[in-house]
Length: 164
Ligand code: PNS
Image (cartoon, rainbow, N blue to C red; front, side, top):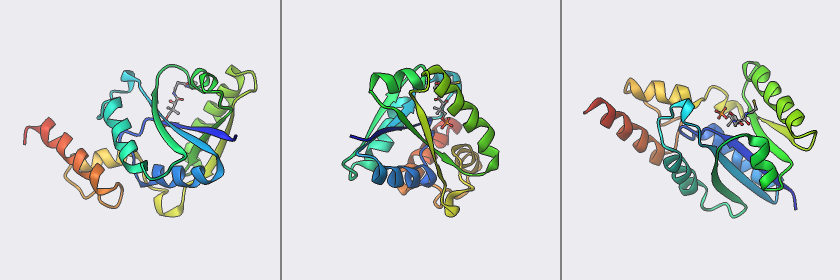
């Protein structure tokens, strides 16, 4: 059975992530979306909130499941007996960081863990979670970036933070 992990912070998940997940789900028998639980990144949403968001959006794709993970990605993949990591590549600016991570993971796993890259669809190549948060913080329109349920959650988060 071909298995893969698509790891990320997903803070919050946006249409670019969902596009990669849907395409990867067609390539593997089982795809696990691994949500990083790392407070050092000071996420806007708790890991439980991020897992819940993804579960809601992906509930109709039977071979995709959502989990949180902490620590090293190589250890998480080894614990699941997964040898393939999926990552999206938007632009050349992603390349250095992604290459470094892929090579580090290959080294740490003694060559057992490979990373495959899906180029992001042109429609979403500008999208990032940071941009979504920045636009929302300044009350801009994020409806072209995230599904309505996520839009509501992001707006609510900032309303609460700003005490509106
Ligand atoms: O969505 P992101 O923030 O770009 O995802 C980054 C992620 C989660 C893939 C990366 O930070 C990660 O794998 N973190 C776990 C720790 C680890 O294994 N780091 C790689 C070795 S340096």
